Amino acid sequence: MFNISNIVSFIFVLLWSSAFITSKIIIDNATPFLSLSFRFIIVALFFYFFYLIFSKKNNFTLRSIFDASISGILFHGFYLGGVFYSLHQGASASLIGLIVSLQPILTSVLAKNYLNENLSKLQWRGIILGFFGAVLVIVTDLNNNLSLVAFFAGIIGLLSSSLGIIWQKKTETQLSLSSNNFIQALSASIFHFIISILFEDYFINFNTSFILAMTWQIFAISLGAFLILMWLLQKNKASETSTLFFLVAPVSAMMAYIVLDETFILLDILGLIICSIGVFIVTKYKTKI
Image (cartoon, rainbow, N blue to C red):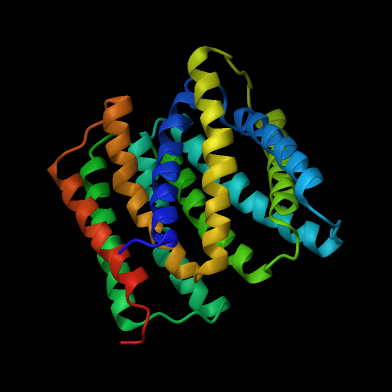
């Protein structure tokens, strides 16, 4: 039986998976770090607008600004920077989606050590099952030529997404959702702008494909999926929420097949089924068995 959390989780997986597809389109028309800086300065303006309208009090402190900035640099800076740069170096949308979706294992270990979160034996079996399903899909895609630079950029994204989830859960900011996300987006925009100025031969081609893909990332991902992630982290354990990323791997591969004509074979479907079973076990059976 579906409840609101199940439905929201399903929407999150679809939106988050679509980010890898639209990221590939953006990278074909712009340099990675300038495009991310452009995206997050617009996102920051929207959240500042929401803050002015909906936040009843100004509860900014130096500590809250610092915590939100670290979250923004981990989530939107190193995580998305790693994803975009890996795509820029030739990784397929499905493969980079698969690499970073392995983070539930790392997040579960970190959550146990730093958040004192404990999972039941059955939940750990679900995590292992989800990991196996994601790896099954990854192995089928590793036949493509993948440079070490692209691979390690993906690994940076993987590590940063796990650390971002742990940091967000551990700090438990007192800021409103809009003000917290304003600071995160602003810090990410500044971070990417500095990287772009220092290391990129930056450009943006404002064609129809870029505008549509960027619009989707601003509204559906940054103003949609990321807010859903923050909501899920407030309601659930970090380790439980992170298992949804197992589903991102095969779903993004399926989307890449439909939109970008990337390969999607029978093993990918099998991996999706196994991942789904693993995530179901982790989210459904929370008692210590």
